[in-house]
Each structure stands twice: as C-alpha cells, then as structure tokens.
Image (cartoon, rainbow, N blue to C red):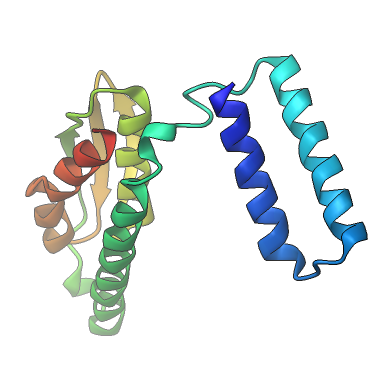
Length: 156
C-alpha cells in the first residue's frame, strides 16, 4: 500500500508542477485522475518495490547531480574530439563489472554509462557490462570505478 501512496504522491506532484493552474475544478480533476490511475495500477498489481523504489528516494537526487556534472564534462571531451578530428579518438571495447546488489542497481549503472557521452553500454551478461568507449580518457574514467561505487551508494 505504501507504494501506491508513493505513486499517488508522485503523480499529484507531477500534475501540479506541469499544470500551473490551481483552481478548484483543475484540482478536482487532478484528484480524480490520480485516484483512477492509482486504483488501476493497484488492481493490475504493477505497483511494487521495483516500479516504485522507495529506498532510492533520498539517495538518487544526489547521484543525479553528480551524473549531470559527469555528462557535462564528457560532452566537453567529445566536443574536443570533434574539433581535433579523427586522430583524437581511439575507440575500444572494454568490460566492466557491476558490483551492485540488485538488478535495478545494475540497470542504473549500465544506463548511466550510456548517458555519459563517449561511452555506450553494448551488452550486459552476468554482471559484466561490455562498453564501447570513444577515447582512452573515457575508458580510463570508467575503469576507475567511481560511477560503480556511486551507484552502489545509491542502493544502500
């Protein structure tokens, strides 16, 4: 039930942020819509700890800020490669081990790799992520394990 309540809260917050109108009629429509979706999701049994990971509520925003910074820095590296030409890239494929405890943690890690410019997760098998890296610098950053450690911290 706590997951349905969390879903309802998130839907209501999303509605309020995107609406910008707080008249009684609009708020009534919000309540009806949120209740309808929450009841429907509960009846379909799709709201659980995997779809609403409450344990990430306070740790994931900090990770998002760090990831946003990393994406920005990686964009600069890729832009520099574009300006320098084809001699500045050294593409390679490497494997990194995901040390996360849950499947959700592994997915967050693999998606974070892909979101960072210059690296793409190609395959995931037995907690081994195959990654294509555009430059030696992006491969070295990934091999330091900083992103892996931060995703593990998010899971706690």
